[in-house]
Image (cartoon, rainbow, N blue to C red; front, side, top):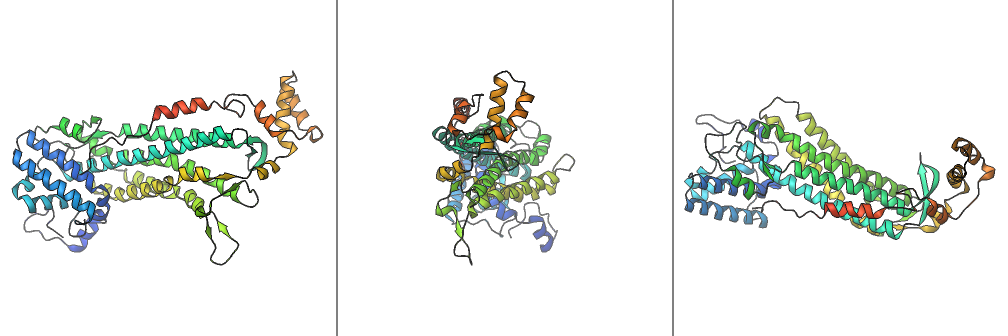
Length: 439
């Protein structure tokens, strides 16, 4: 390992203790490395603007940062155990190539605001990806809701057959859920869109840092003003991002449960393309919906990440090394969550209904609620209508399409109000991924 940034003259570092301190930081920092490079560029520009770097020194730093980013992308530079973390790797590279100019770049900053700004940029990027996936999923669901508005299927409560429903209503429910999730991702991204660079270790520095420039250069919407709050926001903002992801993953889990049930032989409402299933190692007759089951299970990783970050926040103000542990939770939670959600739009496109099985599952009892409402509409008090419609002798099979068409309360099958959901979706818009250039 190269010399530690914080190592003092004459102090020996115990290798076992240093291994414990570093943890898996150097591996996790591969996720954030390009963002760290981008933030180093903006910081160096700021130092030049207040006279701590010359124009030639800045040009050299920018040139070497570009080269480092390119080397990292193509594998010529590997962030590994030679370095304590990504921050020390950047400084070591600049010092090796540029000498004193490389040693000057850390003026006015701390690893505290370095990790904050790199993580913040990473989170903005991940939330943009989350928003885009949810917008795409909602779009597919709305398209299918329109196309399959009157395709009958049973509606369930308590997993018991309840009333006649439709594929269109099923799709509309998920469309609105994903619109809500996309709005939450967008709101959370806007909420955390604040630049912590220049807050140093949480108390500012005795330099007139050009924080307005770094805010603009890194594509932040605003400055995070208080150095103390910059430290308090670490973990808090991470948790908010994980909660936005978790909201979407909870909906994905419930949708996957539906699909798991509907693909079973007992239901038989849905057929999945072969690529979404696997075989059994012993039973030749089996095709298992493993993809759907793993989508259903993926929320567990996000929930674990949320719990880990939240438990770390039982701290007083100021920086504490405990917060380092949350980095792994953040990477793992978003890795698993986005890795699942990226499969969702195509799964929704590929899902194929089995209309005859869905129609066969409708029985006369499922029109009892329609009968009760019709009797009430004719003037009978609803409680009396309810008792009358509970008599099996009065149940009769109807055309499910007629039942659906008669359901005219706003949002029901006969008045789906899809235009309202399309308008909400358009207002969210596709995320433009508009943060700072990386590396």
